[in-house]
Length: 215
Image (cartoon, rainbow, N blue to C red):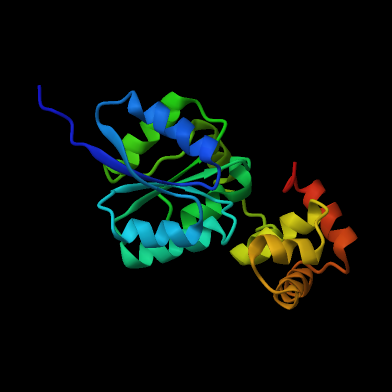
């Protein structure tokens, strides 16, 4: 029986306890090793450049930049890289957006350890990975001739701003969390209101709740 090729994994997540948990899960496998880690987007890009990892586990909500922005940068530099996005968000909120940006797969952090290992092996072999639940969600929309929801027309940053405003965060708080100026966040807010034909943050919040974009 031939020995399985070793899959080297890089973990980018701002929570040390999550990184340690992932490392413990993967330590129980023979064919997957963690060969690098970072706690923010900038370090993820810098440190990954020096590594020879084939797969990255990338948190979608990093403190300094959006995980999808990091994904796009990494894929530009190394197109063959397989990125498995990790998120606290339900799959239907960010999965399609992440896959369109070049992710090889998407998992929620509530996923079972066995599913994580399966996903890494699958994307490490050059395939895509989506959970059975997301596959069903996609199948349900095949053949739909309805127009796409307005929130799907937003850029990644506009969508992130929408969910944060709808969660009750002020423009100032959002600017601080995303390391952006208040002016820039205000511009995102203005643009998304125009795109979604809404008048104010209250209407935006109502839309987000109605469309289950926030918990």
